[in-house]
Length: 148
Ligand code: AMP
Image 1: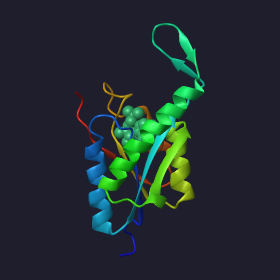
Image 2 (image 1 turned 90 degrees about the vertical axis):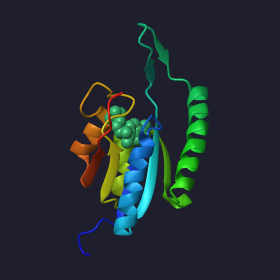
Image 3 (image 1 turned 30 degrees about the vertical axis):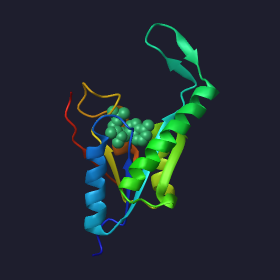
Image 4 (image 1 turned 120 degrees about the vertical axis):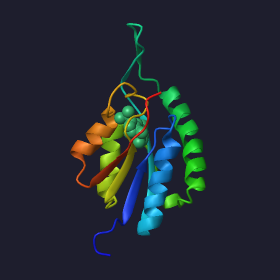
């Protein structure tokens, strides 16, 4: 079929409900017989806002630790979804920019995100989901997640 998806990119933040996003991406990949890739981005803000009025400087040790933890979680989820090693992306930087960059570099034609994650519980659409939707050149599916 000419217009079916060939490469689907699933973006996960390892927040609650992302298994729901993952299973929707897996279903679509099976249905379209598309390649399924997965991405997680470790956010690397130069300063971390604590919310107490004190900003912590960017900490390299912490980032290394976060990367190690994220790698384990990504491998676990990717194994469960039978995603091969070449299709797993663990990036560091701004989630929205990295998701779009990896999608463009790998000819992704559908990006699957949750409607919100960590940053958007009270919003209709979270900020990462919103940016990806507006700036991506391919289709984007925002899987509707319930507010808790
Ligand atoms: P948000 O817009 O941050 O509320 O998150 C909405 C969705 O964007 C999540 O359900 C994920 O699909 C994706 N997302 C958010 N942060 C990340 C991240 N750091 N790495 C990969 N995907 C992310």
